[in-house]
Length: 197
Image (cartoon, rainbow, N blue to C red; front, top):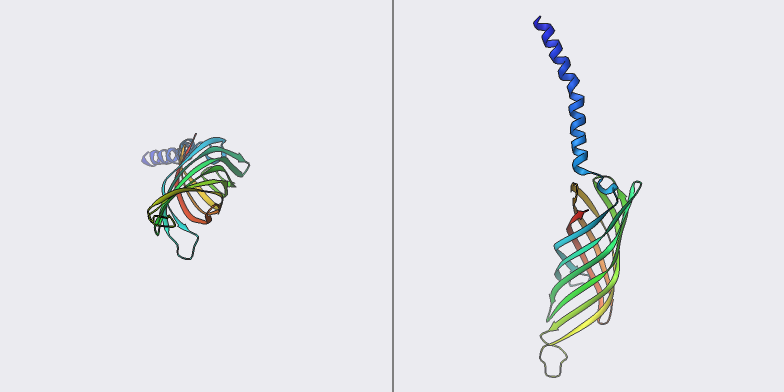
């Protein structure tokens, strides 16, 4: 009688395991939702990142930025089309500068439900207000000015979903600039939080 009871209990336990596994899988899928294989809007917030100038004597700068747009899945691929704003702040020698960049952006790559790896392209103008403590001013005093340049960003990145509507991203990229008194650019390591909606 005892052996029969053990057999029945064992059978019930084994029979319930597939159902429990299926429920756990369904719960995980529910938490993730469509992920990066779902068409949706995005907002990227990069509260702080470091940028280094593309020069023999590199100078570190502080940078932050925002971007927003729409995520479009295409089979196992995906693209993000949107707009960005970046603000780079730095001091080099006797000059303090602010690089204000904005324009369209494109991310194109492969996507699963939980990850998105891609190439990054950005293009737009850069406004550079600056202040000098010394320079070619006639009286030798401080002076201020504004320079204009065009910027092309080439890079890549990866985003990983940590919740249905939240992902973490990392983008190394080169910002190439050319214009009025501005030639060169930055290498940046950008970490950000992505909100999906």
